[in-house]
Length: 477
Image 1 (cartoon, rainbow, N blue to C red):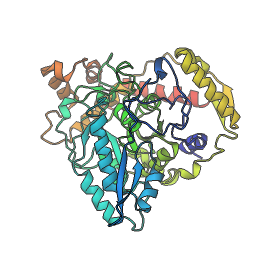
Image 2: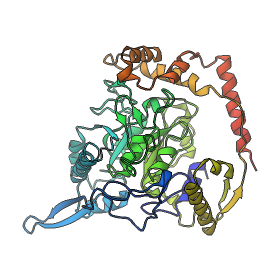
Image 3: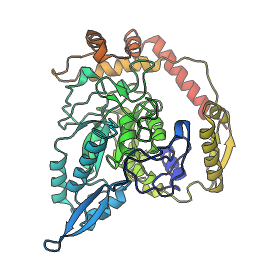
Image 4: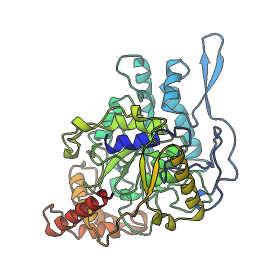
């Protein structure tokens, strides 16, 4: 069993609308319409501050005509719906992909662009309805999987050939229209998923500067936490996959795709009550994704249920000749992780908890974590107190790899993009700092000052140190 299967075994026991897995997800109430509460627990302060009111209690439904003459109406609720429920509605003739896509477009207009203005969606696919209609025509043919006809939102550092740019939230890339789908986008498309749009993110995946709120980009502005619009401070949405987190929590799509180098899936999943899976590096190809660091980068699903995240994970895996890290997937990866969604998945599991980290969070969060620990024990797991080794080593690997990866990516963009290297990006931003680098660009400049040679002795030393420290942590008893 690999690490990703073990994760699903552990979390598969809790597959409600508002499941949580340790620090990955939690349950709160949104400031936008939400009617399937499922007896959600309510929290009251700091990070878990609930909304004390909802904008309204109106159900957002799709009213469908049944029959040519009777015009009998039935309602399909898109709030908190799941892949399985949607597929059931497709099969029963209660719903079409066109109707589903239109409902999400309407909801995005109502709550992302107006009303509370979550500001999570950066671009919408102008061909989404056309694609949905084509998929409706072909529904029922052999080989159609669970994502067939399902709208998906992608973080805006993932290339797609749709009429949407891939920007990483930076003004310099506002005209960066990809010539080819990222491997991730191609896998989704091959599975019949509808790429509904691109979502806002922390600019350059939170690798541009310091002292900037998570979820801010100079191109897209600030993503808001749907649980705390007007109440939570800027940055509470988590990042860098901020738009993915906020949009899926807001029911703007069923599932979304984020990317992570160090916490960028888990952080917004936690902040937005989602299930986020950060896969083992190499399980999912990085080809066509604007990078930070090849040694740590990965894409991964973000969803409202464990089951939906598991379904999406299986679609994303595969062997990509352009990403050598995926070579082992021929024998290690699965295309279906749902068999590992076991109600008794925690029975016999051994989970380590380093309580030193709990001292860094507020009392309510500590209480929540302690309740989760009690619950997993009751479900058959053994919880062991551990101390994760800490190191004073200051790794520079990310900055070295960022420069090399970004230079490689930018060398392939079209002539419509005014920058062809990290050096060009820095110069471009300096031309109009108020609009292009409101919080500065110290991380870009730090990376630019380093070598992009993979054989650079300092880089090699830091990379070998990282591997040695990681191996020491992995060998913990």
